[in-house]
Image: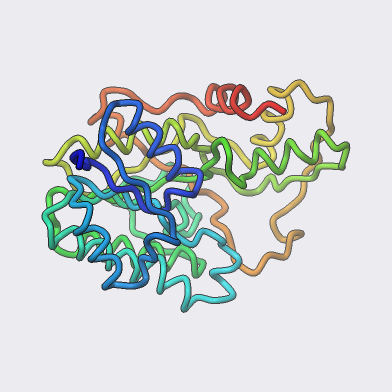
Length: 286
C-alpha cells in the first residue's frame, strides 16, 4: 500500500474535494473520507479509520455547516463540530499525526471594525459558531506543535452548494435579486484555501491558529454584484438588510480576518477575491 500523507475528512464537500485534488496534483498520497466512510461523532470509528490509514497529516474539513440547522439543533451541532473534532484530535494524538482543523469566522461576534487577529477573543453569537469553537478548544487543548486551527470565511468553490452558484442561477433565470448589504467579510476560494492548507500541513513544526481568506473584503451585496458583472450578466442587484431575511441564526455583521500570520509563514497572501471569482467562473461556467 502506498504511503498516505494526507487523510481528508469531509471529502465530499467543496473544500474537502479541493483539498484532495490539490494534494494529488502534488503527487502526495491522499485518502478522502466522506461522512458515510467516517462519521466523526463516532469516537471508536474515527480512531479505527485514522489508525487504519496511518496518515502523516489529517486535514479535518468535515463539519455540519448548515448555520440555521445548527441553531435549530445545537446538540447535533456540538456532537458533530465539537465532540466530533475532539474525536479526530484524539485519534491523531494516538498515532502522532499532524492535525489541520478548518474553523470559521463565526467564532467572532462581528462587533469589530478592523480585521480579527488570530489572538482576538472568540465570542460566537450562533450555535454553529459555538460548536466550531468547541472544536478549536479540543484541537488546541494540549498545545501540540503540529496541531493547527485555520479559520476561514465565506467559502465557495466548484461543484458545491454555495453563494455564487445560487446568485448566478437566479441571475441567469431572470429572477429578481436582493442581497444583504450589512454583513462584511472576505470570500474564500476553495482551491486557494486548499493550497494554503497543504502549505501548513507541510510544516510539522507549526501549530496554533491561522486565518486564511482571499485578499480583500466586501459585503454580500458587493460580492453578488462582482459575480454578476464578472459573468457578463446585466441584472440589477437590489439591497436588503439582514433582519429582512428573518433567519434563525444570527450572523456576524463584520468578520474580516487578519491573515498576516499565514502570509508571513508562506511568503505570500491568498489571491484577491476578484481574481478568485474569475477563476471560479472559468470552472463553473454553464
